[in-house]
Image (cartoon, rainbow, N blue to C red; front, top):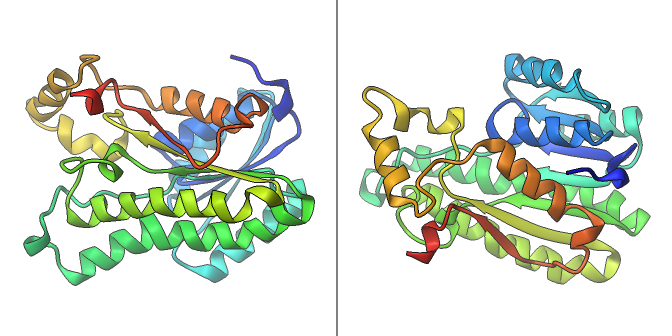
Length: 254
């Protein structure tokens, strides 16, 4: 899969240190893009940089927290200094809640999950969106989940955050489409990433159960989500607006 249009374009990726975010960063760099990775995990960002070095693109990272507005602002400023205007925003940073039901969810856990998964997306978007509007063009891809469409994909906080992300995505596109902004979301199912390592722990029975329950019969690789991201952010998807693209091996058809 090759997209000439990404050559020289600036891609801002949150959660770029591992999993889907790392795969997205490497995939866009492989298309010749200038990729700016934002994450708290400095060691993980170094690994992403190492993988991206084998591509034709450029990867620069910035260590920071999506819940801290001043850190995001500094990162966006640095990205602009390095690459110019940001063309594509991939809001991928997020955490799980260990499938914790409501009565077992502490206020601290609720706030942490919602702050990172939802408020962080809001903060990053609002600090990048103005420059997209100024250039009258911008692509935003938000990372949702099948947990944003059905129950059982996470606990109370995670499921609430992902449902909210889908609503936020639709409203963003509705509000800014006529200003040249196109916003969509991706809803992954079982993707084998470090965030899901607990499912593979021990004898891996949980991972095996998930694979059996998935019609495709397997977990996906983060690179498969990255490939969907390349398409969804491309000109080929220009008429796709405010949509949630599932990549779940058929989980939702059951």
